[in-house]
Length: 95
Image (tube, rainbow, N blue to C red; front, side):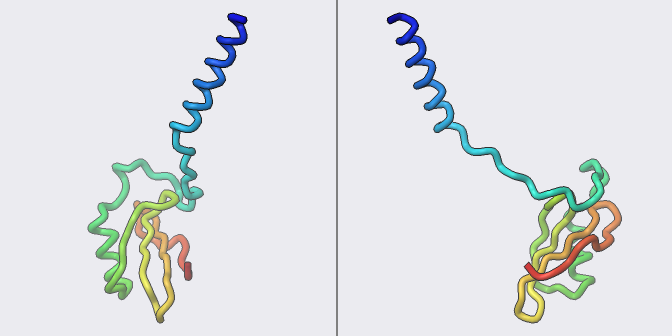
């Protein structure tokens, strides 16, 4: 009886733990070559690059090891991924 009680308590604890923990977030696949954070161009520089590409309304965020520029072009949503160290376009297209 003592073993059954211990087993039930352990099972209840595990169930509570599973419900309390959020699921593991899945990161975007690595698109750009890895660069340590200190080698990344500052966000302001990435925003300047977006403006130089002719984008007026956009937002920039890290994604898949790149700086991703989200914007609209000809009424469609676009994403441009740039290497965070060099600023070279790695991937672009409609989302």
